[in-house]
Image (cartoon, rainbow, N blue to C red; front, side, top):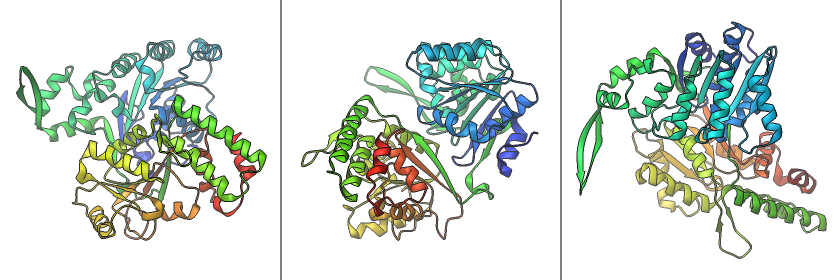
Length: 480
């Protein structure tokens, strides 16, 4: 082994020791247990052993930039020279030149190409990844949040499979490889190797582990999976090429783990955000934003736009196309057990509740906000705290549910949006992290990058009490 840049926890060291030399391997590590670090330590070990000099990292849009800005600088040893590029969907001369250097030019170090999984739905993205791998054959390909390739029929899955054929080492990373059924495993394992599960055909895999009934609906016939079988055998196969760990098994984890998920604005959101930002700057110049409350109101409006809606003065709410709900559902797929979701605005709480009910059923979701009847509130808490109750998602408004409640049944907390009030943030965090909580708690913030959304989070993390002073100059800096 080498000198780690960041000291691994014992479960991370165990995962690394079990997997680093394998040609293919799966890290089934619950969100918050540090699977990205294990993957980067694997790259570093293989590089130091002179077994590879190139890495292709594939991750969803909300995650892949964090590899470039956060994970790689934090965990990859400084003595490894790197040449790194991040996929950009817009064609430009500078990116084309950057890719030419990354793909073809000799480099006495480690080349890293970070690509969002959505790029594999396009010929240009697939071609760039394939060129990088074929020109740098001493390589590793890592698919982060590999449930994004569980649909074997999807174009991006097929293209990632083809790129996998050009690799020396392959890894998949996810907290929960099975989100709906054991059939989700097939394409993830197939990317690693046909020898992983020892099936070349999906239908052979399905026939082995699923009970199927032929149904007739009118003139149409179809096959429906009604149950599963031989799951002990399937689990034994998985154990041969995977490492599984949950947070409650990692006794050395810190009490709180903070993660972020970037959610890019849609074109319409960006347009409205730009207009509102321009108006806010003009009001700062004219002195109209002269009080703390007026400044914070403008911050709130900009945050609402980031969440996908806008409410002009004395008018109805206007919906804006947004990717935030999809990002929330993606995070939930990675989460284990019960989950708390905090959202600042009633409009969002209603939307989140409906989306979760549509996907998981009404028994799995409860909303706790100003409109929740008083005689129902304690029952919601009791049901959520009951590990046998089907209520899995507590969707709350921090001002209403963020004080006094005990919600230790959850060890995953998602902030769909944040308020600028430090006390509310700290109080809402502590609903899960208090006496009775036996596990580390993971906090995931959904953030629109390069907006006040990001700046408010930064201020809260620095324990800045935004509501305690007029922040005109600070806000001006955020906006410009």
